[in-house]
Amino acid sequence: MSRLTPLSGFPELLPAQRLVEQRVIESLSTSFELHGFANVETRAVEPLDQLLRKGETSKEVYVLRRLQEAADGKDAGLGLHFDLTVPFARYVLEHAGKLEFPFRRYQIQKVWRGERPQEGRYREFTQADIDIVGQGELSFHHDVEIARVMVEALSQLDFLPGFRLQVNNRKLIQGFYAGIGAPEVDAVMRVIDKLDKLGPDRTRAQLVDEAGLSDAQAEKCLTLAQIRTPDTSFVDLVHAIGVQDEMLEEGLAELAAVIDGCSGLGTDRVRIEADLTIARGLDYYTGTVFETRLDGHESLGSICSGGRYDSLASDGRTTYPGVGISLGLSRLLVPLVTRGDVRASRSVPSAVLIALSDDESRDRSNRVADQLRDRGIACELAPSPQKFGRQIRYAERRGIPYVWFPGEPGSDQVKDIRSGDQADADAATWMPAAEDLRPIVVSGDSTSEGAPLR
Image 1 (cartoon, rainbow, N blue to C red):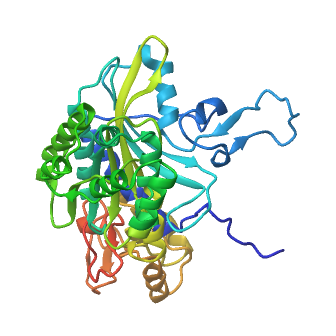
Image 2 (image 1 turned 30 degrees about the horizontal axis):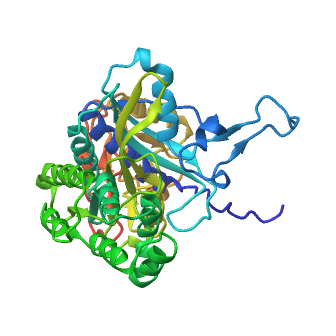
């Protein structure tokens, strides 16, 4: 058989790594549902004209086609979705008559994107999205709410490094560029969006050469992009540049409202700041925009992004404005688990290994296992009736904390193989320590067993 090699861009997780992902999904789902978001799942494929109409390039979309299909087959023109926002817009239009608005949805699902694989960027990956969509209109306070919900959800993941939620407003920057007399506002935005990669000098040159700005206009744009504050002091800093525009003032007010609304969520791990560089590349954003970066892992780029979109979904008669934010779950977790920065406390769900004295005792061990499982305690039988020392070592290798020794009725014993403590136990009443009931997620450098995700 030829040697197997990994397929680049399509990560696969080992059991312990997958346990981390499962615990994170459970935690996120709980957080979202506590705020009243309903779970949905959309189909994996959409018509290509829908996938390509909102700023994505054709090379990033995987086309779906049956192997033996003729060139003009009926499945032609379908592609795998590259995010969850475009399919959700279609979902809202298709099911609008059965939804109550504002509609609050969360969705955790795989997506596919044909980009160059690298750390944190994959061709198949999982996203976790939340959105609030209105019918005809959507109050601005939902922009504040969506930011608060995602910050609270991420804050529950105690094992993560600190993170920074960066907030801006497209009205602010578009109004500013219009106020300085930029000949093409979108061109300025595209250049400024690459400031982190280009640096100030190259950005200044491109603003002049590609966006048609004067040196003085380019300098004002760079001054704006350098403003970052943890509070609403950015308003005075922008006014000090001396640019006037009605849309600019509207954007300043909205951004100040988001920063004020999230101010109580800041901790030593969580920072919320106004960052006037952030623009977001997709053209459907119309107001608030978000990006999120992990401390010490800035090379991953933004792990959580989104914003306000006032016209993503429309049936020609009614427009469905919304605001949402998307967490790149694979971008966040795969680098952390593969480097060992985050791990599960064990690689299997089992909290207990039921020992076997001999093959004849298998029925007795199965009855013990059934009693434990009836009360929600995951367990498994030893694969064979070896010496008890070997069965204990088997449990150690799998990270199973307890070994159960069935005896005569009323004489069972359970051993905590980490401490060596062994005591009488009744399968109808015994419970493991709370932190041992399920695998938990801990930091890779943790010397303790950590704590369950809240």
